[in-house]
Picture 1 (cartoon, rainbow, N blue to C red):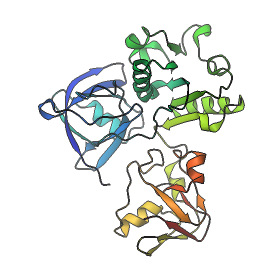
Picture 2 (picture 1 turned 90 degrees about the horizontal axis):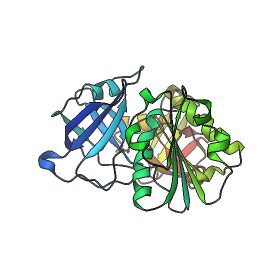
Picture 3 (picture 1 turned 135 degrees about the vertical axis):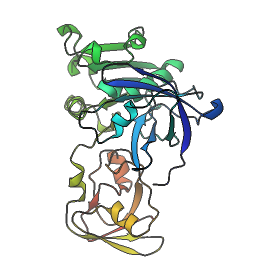
Length: 320
């Protein structure tokens, strides 16, 4: 991983719900932070000694470069990331990467429909800030189990463009794909973020209703399948176009693992096929795409994730 780490300080911390902590980060001596676009995330070095890095969306207004805001859910099956973030206190120092974005606003669209489930509201909140400031037409649907489980409710319920949907609330306010997504509109972009099951339900409902896949923009916080499945398959060879060197990728190995073991300076971050930082271009061969970040158009253009995808051909040549 080749991150340029930035030092930040936790300037405010509060428990927004029983399981969600909101952290505001500032630069040392109140230095201005790098700009970012709505939908961006940062890598966070949660535990330097263990090399534990996790990705979190920036949910504050993108035009505020004085501070970054993160909202982190304490995962019940946490491998240390979210629990480490919850242990932070005001005054603690935290190292983060520069913001990166593969979930930005589609400015080709005239209208924007944002659908969030649980903590998936974080990148969509930043989008709402940007769309509001630009006078764009948008609507945000925020789904949560209950009001007590929802974050930023006081801010959102004052916005007439926001619809809150609670599972334990009256039936007439619960989220309905038929009513709340509406009919497909060629000038509308649909953005979905949240738990895997929620996203699968919304996206499959949209596709069934006739929404074209290119109109649907998504970001996942966890891979669709177990990451062990990314490394399963027949042996193949990866050839690097810039050096001509070849590497054998066996069953149980990922392309990224093999490249890193061979001393190749290959980009990466999440190693789960959801962040897109490891994307390279395929120059020859047939990829076996197993990521959940590339669009159909990007795959057709030859883009490939080394951390999660494999090959259907004996040789795969990469632009590395």
